[in-house]
Length: 427
Image 1 (cartoon, rainbow, N blue to C red):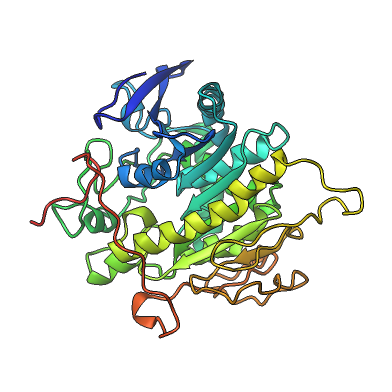
Image 2 (image 1 turned 180 degrees about the vertical axis):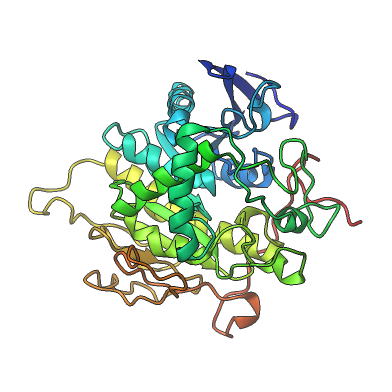
């Protein structure tokens, strides 16, 4: 490992991935070790027009004893070479070699438990990779931050667009699709506009990079695979905003919503991921929830910490525990509740999505009914592929909606120290 552009304590390693039709290909693995490691690690995967700079996310995991790793995929960020088309791929399986190598390095560093954290396109990549490697025991939990599960367009536009892109992508994969990204999301993030963050605009330009037909075809292929149903066997937490911003010019409401994707698509397709999915919706969240305002970030990290302790850490402890007495049926062994007293279901039936609420439940409440769940999502884009298994939607309330019985929000976390990833100074 060499010193990373973020500076200490971050270091990075370039992964040589051979050649493709454009020439040499590399990926970059960024690492930050915990002071008191516990044999657990998280691997972060960025989205489209993105790279790893969210050091406060690493702070959260490292403080809990997790080693933190982030992968700048081929043709993104640290891994983008001068001769390459930014962010291009022909199939999401193109990323599997760097993911496999990153997982190997993480295990060689002494980590037996791996949590994969994917944002947006990285969430879709994480899902299809985890499904492809489901029998290898590589991944032990997945946290999806606003995953890219469908195009942000009406159903009547999505279907013909997908068909046209598929035809073009096969003949001319590098052709630009006339569908440029809006600069509104970038403006909501960057400190020179309406946000609080500073990052490298050469790697993450406000208006994005051109969208290529081959890349969009790869995305649609993976999304169809998701809709057909994946079989990821590990616990999954999917978090997203409660609102979608649809404007093409700046408005203050863009600071309180997902200005990139339709959040209802994420909710609709969450049950197709696997057997154990927890859905968390955060009012006021941006597309990258970790870059939302401080109150939303604190709620996200509080819920993420509770979920990790309940499902990833505790499942790891159960795997290492001695076998239960013969009188206790397999799969029915005692499972302690989280520290806040909320009961935790031991399993999930296929195609059912559990939801988590930020309000504390009474101590030792019964596990939720797994036989059915009300569908509270709003289907604004009806079509023949709609309505997979219903998902409960107990939306996390905005701060103003807290009742007297609710606990106060957690204290604001200290921002990360690296200038490349911390909130910018006012002005």
